[in-house]
Length: 247
Image 1 (cartoon, rainbow, N blue to C red):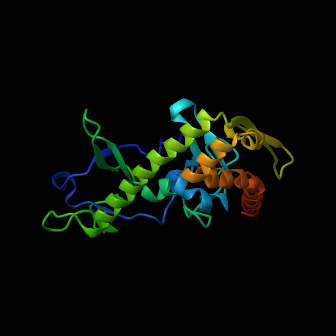
Image 2: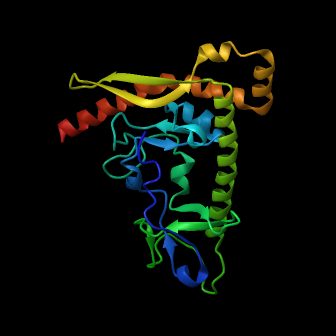
């Protein structure tokens, strides 16, 4: 589980003075994520993501993060094609948000909307969507991205509450996934955690009821079901190997 935040190379606060002529061509080229073998998720995404990707947990303590596994090796994303397209039905919000992100703006903990100016889709040639109009006012596109990023930030807080609850109930256990590749070799994907179904089954009624009422029980079930998606990743690896051999 590596390099989750490395896609942001030069995130700077957005301002009409500095970025009045800036435009963004977004959503068609995902080569910026080609080296991610996992992508962070928020709890609102679990149901859709679980239908396609294994969902695991990485990190320790408060830094514990749920993520969709999209590669079997370090620096490998099996969902990004050579042309940069996303090969999958669901694109995680973490990637749809890019190149925008909230960052701490001051000591009081206020956030500022930032943009990664290193993203190749950022330009001053008017390609894509402008951030500001000719009068320096925020465009509808920028307003929409501000709302999307704000909603994501709120979901991030809820996701932190979810992972904190998993840790409080001691439901997580280390796990390793092993796969056989088309060339006959075997690799192991480790360094992640999953919910132990045995520990979940042994929770007392009060804890289960609390998980149900908070909505976290359904999120857990989506995670558990997603672990059966590993063969789908293997199929992607086999398809990519076949395409490379044919080329």
